[in-house]
Length: 541
Image (tube, rainbow, N blue to C red; front, side, top):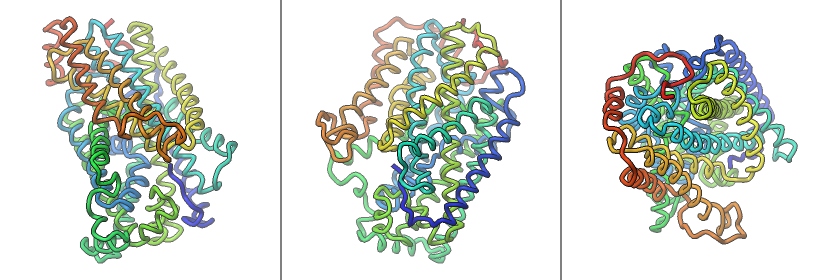
C-alpha cells in the first residue's frame, strides 16, 4: 500500500501537485475526445493510428507498461533493500528483451486486434472455446492489475485529504475510475495512446532530472553515491548484498526467484502490452518500436535505481522507513531534499499521470477482449457489425470501470503489490504457455490450450489463496486465520511450469490438429500478413 505522511510535502506543494495533475487530466481528456475514432470502425478503436513513428510507438509501449509502482515502489525497494531492489529492476529489463526476441514479431504477424485472433488462426476448429478461455484469463489479469492501480490512487490522494474515510475513499475511486473509463470508452486506442505517450515523456524527463540532481550532488562519482548509500542505510556492507528483501533462508530465496520468474515471463503475456504490438502497420516499424521500448524501460529502471540509492544516501534509510515502512515515499522525500516543494509537486503529479495511463491501457484491453473475442466471435460467431462491436466495447469499458471501482473499494487495505504480482503470475502461468506453444510447437492442440489457460489460472489463484498472503502471518489479509499450506507468497515457480505441463499433456492426450493448419500459421507468423481490413470478424466463422 502506498502511504505518505504529511511531512513529505507541505500545503504549497500539495496545491501545486493538484494543479499540475488537473492540468494534465484536462489536456489529455480534451485530446482524447478530439482523437477519438471519428468513424464506426473497430480497427481505429482497437489499434488507433497505425502509421505512428517507431519512437511514438515505443513511447506508448513504455507508457503502457511502466506504472506508479516503478516510480514509487521500485525506487523505495532499492532505498530500503539495496541489492535486492536493484535485482528486481533488472528483471523488468530482461522481460522486455524476451518480448523483443521471442514474441513481438510472430504475434503481430499472426494476430489482428487481440491475442484471441492469433490463437483462433492457430486453432480454428475450436477457436470459440479457446477465445472464451483466453477472455476469462485476460479479464482476470486486467481486473486485478486495474484494481491495484485504483487502490493505489486512493493512497496517493491521501496527500491532499489525509487518511480518507469511507466517503472520501469512494469519491476518490469514482473520480479516478471515471477519468480512466472516459479514456478507454470514448478515446479508444487513440486516446489511450496520447496519454501514454505524454506519460512516458514526462516519466523519462522526470527521472532524468532527479537523477541528474542526485549524481551532481555526489560530483558524478558512482563510488561516492554507493558509499553514501551504504552509510545512510545503517546496515554497512549488507546493504549491497542479497538477502534484505526476502531474507537469506532457502524458502525466502525461492520466493524471490518465484517473484522474478513471474515478472520476467508475465510481462511477455500482459494483455494490454501485447495488444500494443498489433498497432504498427509494418513489421520493421514494430521491431524498431520494441527496441525503443526496451531502451526507454531500461533507462527508466536504471534511473529508478539511482533514485533509490540517492534517497538512502541523502535522506537515510531509517527516515524513509519512519514515513512509510514499504519505502514508497522515498522518491518524494528525495525530491523534497533536492528541489523543495516544486520538485516534490512535479514528482507527485507524475505519479498520478503514470497511474492513469496504465489503468487506461488495462481497461481498453479488457473491453476489447469482451467486445471482440466474447461478443464478436463467441456469441455472434464473427457476424457482428462493426457498429455493434464498437458499441459493446464502449459499454464493456463502462461496466468494467464500475466493477473495478467496486472491487477497489472492497480491496482497500490489501497490499497493491499482491494484486499486481498475482496478475503477473496468471499471465505467465496461463496466457504465456498457450502463446508460446501456439507460435512455436507444431503439436499444440485446442485441448492443450484449454488446459493451459484454465489450469494455469486455477493453479495461480489457488496457491495464492492458501499462501501466507491470505492467512497465517501478521501481514496477511486474514492474520487471525491459519489455513496456509503453500509456503511461498509468489506462486510463479509452481504455477508457471504447471501451465506449460498442462498444455503439453492436453496436446499429447487429445486429438491432433490438421498438419496444414500449423504450416499455414507458421508461414504467416514468420513472413507476415497482408493488410487487414477493419471488419469485426476474423474470418474463422
